[in-house]
Image (cartoon, rainbow, N blue to C red; front, side, top):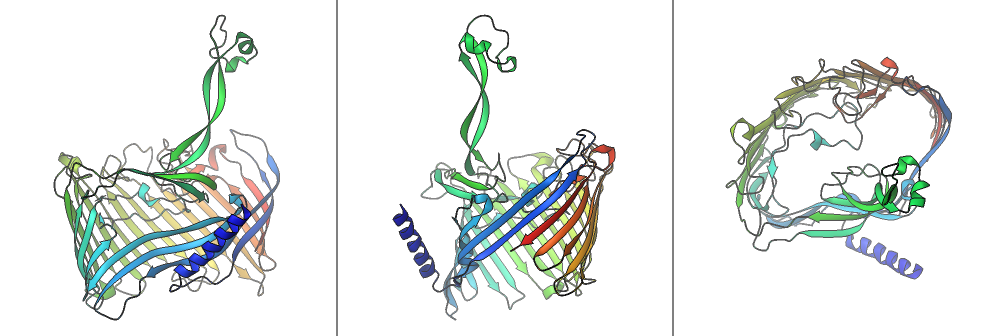
Amino acid sequence: MKKYLLVSLTILFAAAFVWAADAATAEPSVDIEADATLSWGIDLGSKAEPGLKHGFKNEASWSVKFPLLKKADKTSTKNDVPVYGEVSLTDVELNILSQKKSGGNFVLDGKVDGLAAKLVIYGAYVSVFNKPDFEANYAKIWVPADKNKKYRPEDYEFYPSFSGYGTKIGYANKDLMDLDIGLKFGSNSNYDPDGSSKIYSEKYFDGNTELGDDEYIRVTEKRRIIQEVSKEKYDNTPGADQAPPGLTAAPYYIYKIEEISVWKSGKDIRFPKAGKYPFKTEKDGDDENKFKYAIGFDLSIKPLDKMLALAFTVNTTFGKSYPDANLNFGAEVTSEPVDGLELKAGFDGKYDFNKSGSSAFDWDTVFTAKCKWIGAGVYAASAGTEVGAGITDIAVFAQFVTKDSKKDATNLVEGLDAGAYVGMYRLLTTTKSRFPVFAKVWGSYKVSINDSMWIKPFAHVWFDTNPFPEAKKTSAQPYAVAYDIGVTYSPVEKVEVEAKWSHGEIAKNKYASVITKSVTGGERYGKFVLSLTLTY
């Protein structure tokens, strides 16, 4: 077994470097990230859960990565000729990786995010692969004030589209106002329809990796079953586990907990816990009875360079029997009239061929403006969208942000990282109990004492009117408040000592009902943590 593993790894290394001979291969190095934290804290509890919780906590994480191919785009070499074929692979990456949550084991971690192939003839082009995008997605709502890697834009965006095989025939010229124009032709199936497929393998998830709707992992679950037993075993079973209790004649039944192994898709577990799982993908086959067609048109141009940029798309299926048959279109206008000022407006619309009346057409639109430290935006969406959810609704936001780095365009004062955000989400929803307002104010200031020593006080404050009390994990308080305050001190490089007081709790990746445990109403009395962190 050891010899087989050694030979396999040797072949893997050799193949990786030979395959990437003309690409930017990774240097024979290792990337190591590690940190360890010792902390002592005390949690004062809450009105519902009184009592103190306190003690030490030891935490650590690491990542050891041997990069075989560093993440990059790979494009086939083309000569300086007007006619050529081009094949591009996007975000190609291959590593041998070990993390704490992987049990210390090394696993192969890599992917090719996508492949595109086209024939170019004097600026005109014909796409060969991948399938054309018959979609409109210009009106994107801004990201929440607090988000992490688990933020899913599709939970909030309106995304009119349909899929199909086909090609795009167009013309692109960067010297001609960055023009890109093209016609798309597609079909729902083809002359050699693919059947349904299932592909089995193993995959490592780091806790922030999303599981797709057609992807499955095998997990162990506990379930309660009813089992027939003898009278003696029934009598010796606690009443709570008798099914039902108090039986005096056969048959006798008890409840029993057993572990079972089941497949779960991304619809059940969107972000699996860190670990290695049996993994499979399931895909439906092509329709072998309906052969329908679709067409689309794309245009993007910058007639005034940064002063004005335009983009437009329209896509439609021929007939109602095409899967997800619809007419969708979108447009975007962007402008940077002066340095630092960015204006953007977007609109998406969809007419569903299989609906009638007002419900057949849905839309969303957005307008945002940003000028260095200040930004604001308005988003509106119809009843059939994620944000509308039954009615035409509106969301707005305004913010002031300055980053501590001189390299950032928003930098006001070196070392100062601060901002204020105000958002109002689903303003027209009639089921809300009060006017929806969420606000956040934060700030930190890093003071350098010498080349390696610094101190940084910080504070964050959240306020929420909690307009949707029916939402999950939402504070019961009509006006919720949460905050944290503290100071971080670094006596030497890669060593940090932090004292932090937290009062209340928040949920990330949300636009409203952000505060889950409020300072008010005794939902959370507060928590103090003193920690020491060492970083590699």
